[in-house]
Image (cartoon, rainbow, N blue to C red; front, top):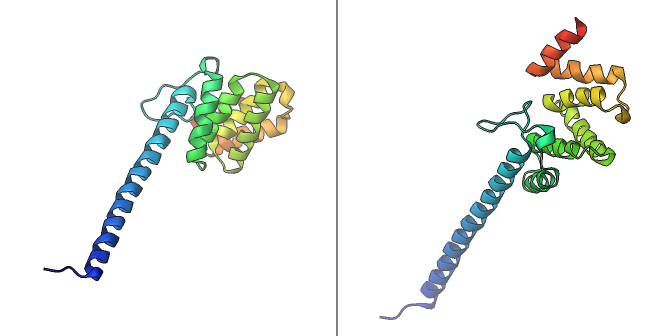
Length: 166
């Protein structure tokens, strides 16, 4: 029995298609796994009480491992650049450095997030105005951030706003 050239060619094309499909699935699952690993690392190193993911304890600023958190959150954002939560954690990581450069970088990220009405970032900007006088957030700006976070329903902001306005 002879096999036609067309049939052999068809078998080769199908085989190549199957191999490509398997390779694509393997590559995609590897990328997805790396994404989860980076996000998990970032979350474990810089999770906040303001934006607490499920089953992860928030990390206090003075407990953030600054360099590791910045690396992990930056890698996570390389893979998932639209995640506001990861951007917020990166800002917290920069803030934990407690240097002027780190605070300015954190403020820049928080302002970007505030423009997206990300409530934890708005509240954090209010706190920046309270604690970091060198960042020159004036009183009107500071209370605008607080009110915006409260209006978005962030519980800590609502409580603080009620206490502030008396």
